[in-house]
Image 1: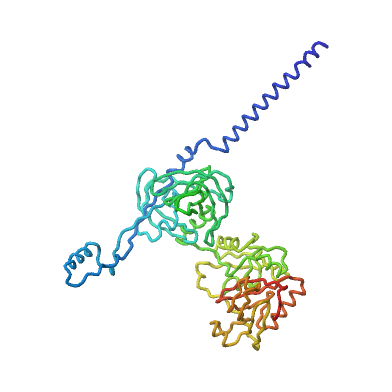
Image 2 (image 1 turned 90 degrees about the vertical axis):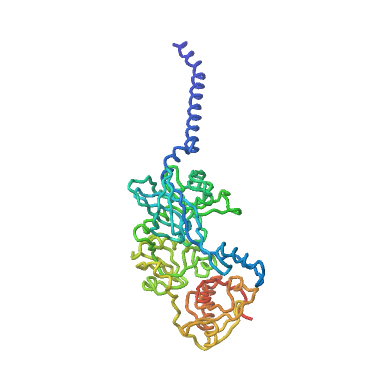
Length: 493
């Protein structure tokens, strides 16, 4: 018995060593498996799956251009008949317009078996003929269903008797920075081409109100516009729209409009032939840290209302100076997020809007209008009447109460009120904050001001409240903007 125990004990280190080596081999094998799943050996299977749904788009249009300047030939010159014949062959004199056909190339993708196709608006803009080339070489004419210049999206339709291969939209909100993506399209007119890369960044904004771009380093060039950006499941998570490049070619900074924006636009174009975005009816600006301090807010977040024209917001009691912090159950971080939330909300829906008003929080119900119907709505005017005119130098500004002469000079309406900035010291904080001569101060400390005394009262109130700045509402040619001026500046001269 003792011998058996001794033999077992002598074999234990060898058994443990074998067990350890086996476990190490399993860990290495598992690591290789995980690495293989993170880095595909090939995109070939995915390309085979998605290629039949991607199309090349060729557009043509008639453009009119003028011929170059005509040569000056002395009358009676032996060259007169020669130059007249030359001009006739080339479309007339320099003062005559010559029509010609122009072509453009782009990409797109099929989203339904009955022939709906998505592309960029700039690919088909002003086109009078649109042709679709499919992966198998078949060519069809397409009809334009609708466009949305705000997101640069267009919806086309081809007539077909057979079901077409198509792809579906994925959830772009699930895209993570670093994930693999594949772009496909017609770069530089070279035909169907696939490129791969990763998601470089999310929620990029270029210049549009509703921008929500996915940035990718997958090669995107001219001709890729309108083509799809796929995830590894073969779902479209973006529409390739723009590149950042000093030379016009791909340098690895491409932008695809997020599918969660595109899919909503496409649904509306398919149903109505146009977009129908929600409209709240306010003009807004971001809350800066100095503005937050001037208002006594804990955080510089939300969207501050600078003006309320006639519309849904005004009917519901929203007012200039309110800070919108929640819209339809979602927190508002800044103006961009609010614009997107409102635009994505159904026209006619009644939503709850929570605002900070002074030291109170209020929630109001607003029934949204339609943004596309509101473009010509004028801004509301302040109704208070000015008192007897006075002037004052304050915080680097020369201020004057409104007079009939100033109203005429500044092209203000008879019902305009406030204090006119007649001059600004270029070394003062007011100048640094963008205030200029001719600006109209209508509010201070979120209260209407039409006299010098009312402004001084609001400055005193801000100081008594322990604030470092006073919040002013400035109007320049009717456009409102809030500015926070520090109170530690010299108040008078």
